[in-house]
Structure formats: C-alpha cells, structure tokens
Length: 216
Image (cartoon, rainbow, N blue to C red; front, side, top):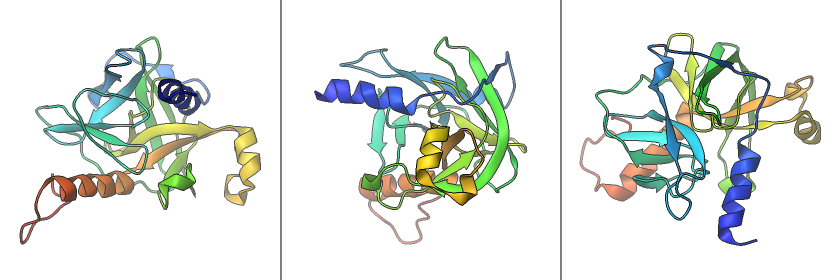
C-alpha cells in the first residue's frame, strides 16, 4: 500500500461512530469547535474538527494529514497548527465519572455533540506510541468529530476526540474495567496534550531561566 492509501485507510479506521450524536445550532461553549481539512496532496479530501489551544495555535488529531499551518505532530495522535484567535477555552484534567460532552462536526458539516461519562479505564492504541495513554468515555461520536474538543460540565476542555473501540475490540482486550461496554469513545486527555505541547516548545525555542513550558 502506498503512503497516500495508508493515510486514507488510517483515517477511515480512526474516524468511526459510536452511537448517534445529536445536532445543535448554536452554543457559546460548544461553538469553539471548528472544521479543518487536509491540504495538498489531498486538498479537502479529509476533514475533521479542531479547537483552539491558545491565542496563536489550535490542536487536532494528526491522522488528518497535510494540515495547513501544522507546526508539530506528536508521538500521540495530536498535532498543533497555527491559528490565531481572540482567546482560547480553559483546559483541565478530567475526573473519572464526571459528565463529558464530545463536540465536533459530522461528515455533512453539521455541528454535533454526544454526552456521556468519563470512564476510569485508560488504553494504549499503538505500541509504537510508547507510553501514550488515552482516556475513555461512553459519549457517542461520529465520523468527522476526530480532533474536536471534549468538554466537562463546567465548560472546560479535558481532551480531544480520537477514535472508538467496538464491542469486538473490547472483548479482545479482555479488560475487566471495560467489561459490559458496547462501544467506548477514545480521547486524548489534557495531560498528554500538554506533554506534546511542551515537547514542541522544547524543540522550537531555547530554554531560558525561569521558563514555564506549560504556560500559554
């Protein structure tokens, strides 16, 4: 399989649906999600969702290839790209058991959201990623929502949508902490995104005394 076909296959595998998210019109919190597309040599062939990370950069998944303005692709399924905005949402770590809302756009460009709860289980998706740990929830997601924000009830972002595990996938894992779940949505949590952001800063900027890499 050539590289372009491999990228397309990866996007299909990683952008499935888990239940039926619901459409919404406007929301002052959820409207912070926006559509992104692949660039050349696959211009507009693949779409996903992104959210602002700070005033100068936004974040999405890296399985959306050739993203215009991309500056860094992490070890995890995450990439940062240049995107200026007047502000950015507040971010924090998620708490297992709390209510979460996955937000993004479906393949028809309709803004959608799915509500569920944060699960305590964490999973690895790819051995090549090393110790990257993804968080889980039971909120329904749909194709196109990859890279979109996962909001807590207080309006803060706790991660970005990445993928899902089917009932068959879960059975293969033989995880007692996921037993009984039909499908589980996967999201990259704030802690992992922050770790990747710090790696980007470390390679792009010389360290200075007193520098706080996590500050944005």
